[in-house]
Image (cartoon, rainbow, N blue to C red):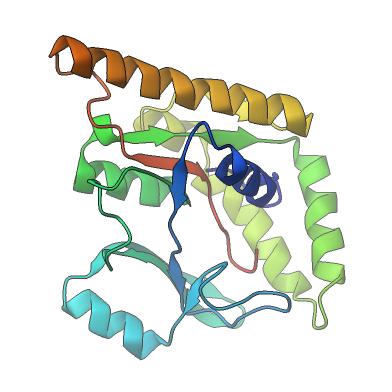
Length: 218
């Protein structure tokens, strides 16, 4: 999790490549338009609002959030579509703080390990501007709305309510990724030790990992 343009996508990809962690990727869904350079089933599964509603009614949606953007409502959601089989191993996905809370309610707090990524606001804003400028049809209004919304979504009060007491500042990418890998390994090792000893650990059957959050247009 983290505010827009804090480097979550890059960290996400590097964590996937870390063979010692063996984290399987989860592809989430969105009703927003596919952006230049994106591919259906890679960044997201791109669906219509009608498809989302059908999946929600059928009970397939674990969590969702809808944003009223300058381009209309966009919904992001995670579905129980066979990807999240906790018997197969541990998983990695990008999510909002609100989505993290939904996963905790759905799977239990002991099965979810939050990774909060941070970065100084001025640096984030410049990155977001550079990224938007590179698009064929830049959406600067939406970029600004998203940037301002982050301050509310990731307020200290909301983070405290979620019980998250640790974050990883992305000042230097390699250092940040190394710290996150160590953090995840610690959870995995502790869980394995408790299983061998026959105890129920605080992170028993640790299965779902979150490294960030996708905001609108990111």
